[in-house]
Image: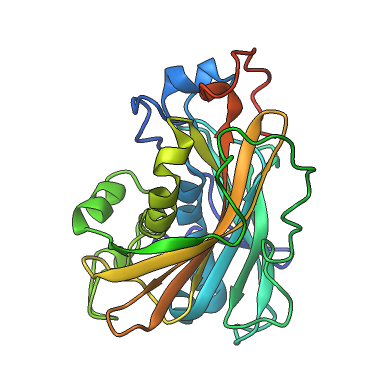
Length: 299
């Protein structure tokens, strides 16, 4: 971990970094340069989960190693960023790194524009996390075409999931904040995957649920909360994952859903949980008549 964290005004402030978008040529995704431009964005978007990697050193400074075992980061994404655009992470210093501590966390561009905001916590705070405090049905639900079959309360089928070491090794080639936990296995008997690796593994039950329903519609992350319960998750370790659909809705340009997923180890012990808001661009779906993509916003 590179010690380039500034402490100022009760905040831990990371250095400006330029995250890589490794999927700039991934056809049919929001990360693809051409596809994203067709949908009204300036170019292929950096996944929100990639930005979570940049917060990791600050969270460990704030809460110590226990954060990897029972910490949570809860973020709502505000503004998309492109390949190589500089951003920095900011975390409020907790009065003391104890169980139940919760502080504000966000990421911003060099000019101070926030690209995401939320909370970071250790253990079980008295107050809900940023996403658990958020009203999920904030928009009146119109006619859903992409997610017409999504019913709140639906249980996702339990599936096998894991983080293969090849996936972690791929992230380490482009990561903005390398840490020894991703390389060494001395602390917990295995390597710790980065946030994007964990998100991908925890998406497995939701992906199975949505596979036919989305019918090629292009998605993007609207919000992510990762919570270690008996963490950390480890690379090349089998888990059973399931989840529940919480809400489905729409905005003028997107349909979206909120869901919770979890991963248990082979002994049935809960390891990690995730809450996610996943958006689908209406303009990318054959279920909508072709309309102008509009401004580069996913609101």
